[in-house]
Length: 144
Image 1 (cartoon, rainbow, N blue to C red):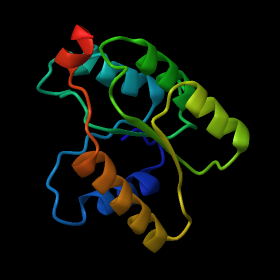
Image 2 (image 1 turned 180 degrees about the vertical axis):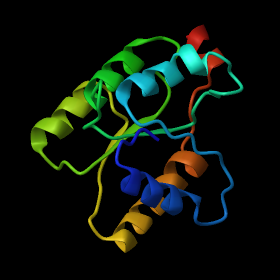
Image 3 (image 1 turned 180 degrees about the horizontal axis):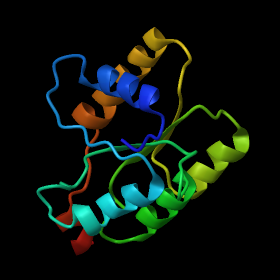
Image 4 (image 1 turned 90 degrees about the horizontal axis):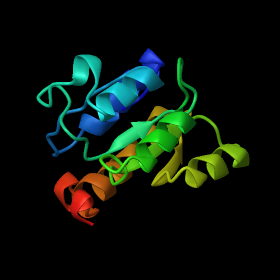
């Protein structure tokens, strides 16, 4: 999860961990840290500290490096382009939706203002992306 707002991060984490699926959520707070994590640089160079994500929820409005740049870099690098990245933002602006999909976002979700609606949306997203969706692992991505 790439989210700079602490209250949004806590709510998202609560929503994602509710239910029967046990998984590890890694949280970074800005675009540079997200890229360091994805590309295993700096404090994330050790793969045990930065396992390959099954899914990334990415806010667009981030300090240091915005979500659009994170998408651009992650989706053009051969070792990260197959990681599903779903934008999770407050912006419903058409230019942001177009910009995200133009940079190969795998999905675009607008954060509801209501916590119950957020729980419902993220529960559905979690089920789809982590239970039903099939992804390509790094080895398969590099072989194609």
